[in-house]
Image (tube, rainbow over all chains, first blue to last red; front, side, top):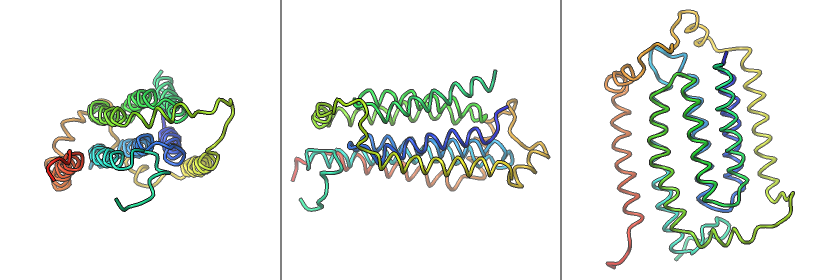
Length: 101
Length: 180
């Protein structure tokens, strides 16, 4: 029998792996991947709780909204990364520390 | 059988996510993300959210991952530099602060979830008592379509306009600046 706690623990593991990727990686694309993992953990929580909400289906509906928002965030983030790479010639966030041209 | 499959999917997701953050090669890490996303879609199925799982495969694997690989290929030189400066030591912890922070966060979350599961909130108990939980025999997709067009029509429209704005913005940001 799979209970709610199973889903929550798995999503906590995925979330913390994403958190580690965001904090430790030296590559902006990998940081974006870490953010994607965190969003996926949140979606898993939405879906797991949405199982108990047959009246409104709120969990599944907002999981779909979260997927769409994550896709939009990745599109804009990658456009920004390409611009940053074009002007700084690096995507290591340690070397990107000035705003002026 | 069901819980065995659940553990298999969960283990696949967690192990390949761990491998993803440890591997040096960014292209391999992106393909490992592929496996993580598929395993997460499998986990959504166990929460009886079949449409979410299909959407996850369509949007993430079909869209987001292709975008990430595309951006990786456009900024390849920096990544090759990163690859060559890898230290050869077996145990090297350059990121121990991040590791400690993530582990503390995870221990707090898991502890609070497990202690929380002894006092399940009232609305879950009520819906379990009334039998108002989603069953595997329900027709989820039809109900979701009705919900999107009636109860959640305003967020649905807002998010479609937002998605269009984001895509126009992304196309505008990543254009070539020739005609100055």
